[in-house]
Image 1 (tube, rainbow, N blue to C red):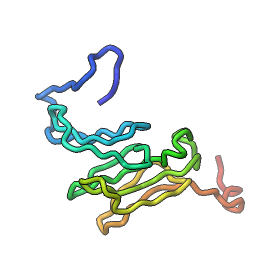
Image 2: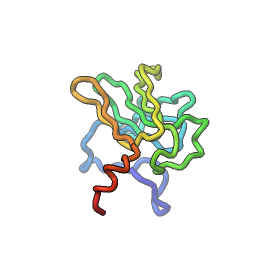
Image 3: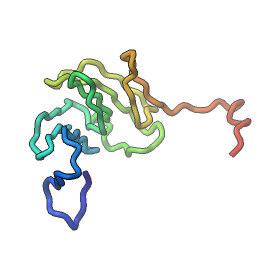
Image 4: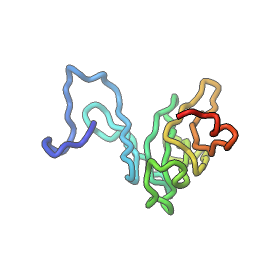
Amino acid sequence: MGWSSFRKTGLTYKDSRSAGGYTLVTPIGGDWVLLIDEMGRVVQRWEPAGVRPGYGFLLPGGHLLLRGQPEATADIRYGEPGGGPDVLMELDWEGRVLWRWEHSGFHHDMVRMPNGHTLVPVWEQCPAEIADRVKG
C-alpha cells in the first residue's frame, strides 16, 4: 500500500492478486495502528497512549509488537542514529501494554524469537581500539 497523487483515495484492491487475509497499517507519525481486512474494513484499531506508532508486527495470538516514539519526543527525526528514545511494546487485543522497553539507540527492526525473547539491533559507540582496526 502506498500513496500517490495520481490515484483516488481509498482502498485499491485486485482480487486476482490478493493473497487474502489482513493488512496491518502503521503510519509513521500517526496516532493509531489499524488492522484491515481485504475489503478495507477496520477489524482492529490500537491507539497506544503516549506513543507515536512507528511500525509493528502481529504476533501469534493477535498481540501487536509495536515500535514507536514517546509523544514527548516525537519532534526528533526518524533515522538519526541514537537520535532519541524509541519504545518497543507489546499490546494485547484490547490495547493493554503487556511489556514496554525504551532505548535511545534502538535501530529500526525487531523480531520475536521462537523462545519468546525479542531481538532488536541498537546503535552503540564502537570503542577506539576496535574502530582503529576497521578499514573503510
